[in-house]
Image (cartoon, rainbow, N blue to C red; front, side, top):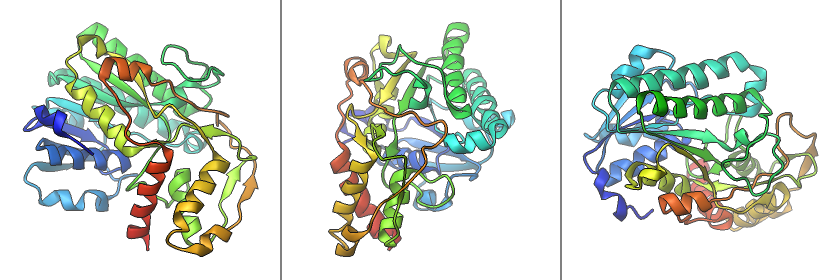
Length: 332
C-alpha cells in the first residue's frame, strides 16, 4: 500500500498488541516499512510466531511475549510509547458463546488493563479494534455509527463495553482514543486452520483441497467484506490525523458494499480456478444458520471519509484476487 502520507510516523514508538495475529502482524509490517519503532505484545494464544519471524531481524522491532490480562505486562509494554494499536482480543462469536468467561477476561479486563497502562504512560493516542458485531439486532442498513442495536453474543457485548470504556477514559482522564469497527476483515496471513477460522481463509483452503465448503443457511446472508489494506489505512489515518474533531470517535472500517455468502463462494472459485481448473467443479454444501449471526451487514463509511480522509483502495474482487494469490503462494 502507498504509505507516503504517513512519514510523520517514522521513528515514533508504536505498540501493537496482538501483533503476531492476522491484523496485528500486517500493522507491524507496514509500520516497519514506514520506519516506526515497533513493539509487539502477544501471548501467542491465537497469534502465530511465523507471522513475525522476519521482523525479529529488524532493529526497530521488539517482541514482548505476555498477556494483556497481566497489568504489569501492559505497563511494561506501554513505556515511552507514542501510540498504542490495540488489536489483542479473543475473537469469534461461536467461541464467545462456548466460553463467555474467557472472552470477557481478555476482551474486557485485558482491554481495561491496556487503557490504564496507556493512561499512566501518557500515550498520545490509543487506537483500538472495535467490531461491527456491536450493531447487534439493529436492522438499519447501511450501519451508521450512532445507531446500534442489542448485542447478540458475548463477544459483541465485550466489544461494545470497549467503546464505553474508551469514551470514559477520555472524559475522565483525557486519554485520546479512536475505535475502529472492523467489518469482516480478510487478507494475507489470515489463518485458515482451527475451529474458529474466518470464512474466507477456511473456504480457500477447502477449495484448494477440493473439499466442499459449508455455507451457514441458504447463503443469502451478506457481509461488508473488508480487505486488510483498507484496515491498515484506517489505523494509519487514526494515528496521524490532525483533525481534533476526529478524535474520541468510533468509525466503521469497511468498504461500503455487501456480498452474499453465495456470491463470495463463486468469487473465490473463479479466482482459484485460475490456478487449478478443477476447483470450479467443487460443489457447495449448506448447513444451519449460526447462533449469534446477524443476517446482513453493510457499513456507511461517510464519517471516516469526512473526518479521517479515508479512501478504501480495495473492493471485494480486488481483495479476493490478492488474497487468493497469497494463499496459493503460501499454502501450496
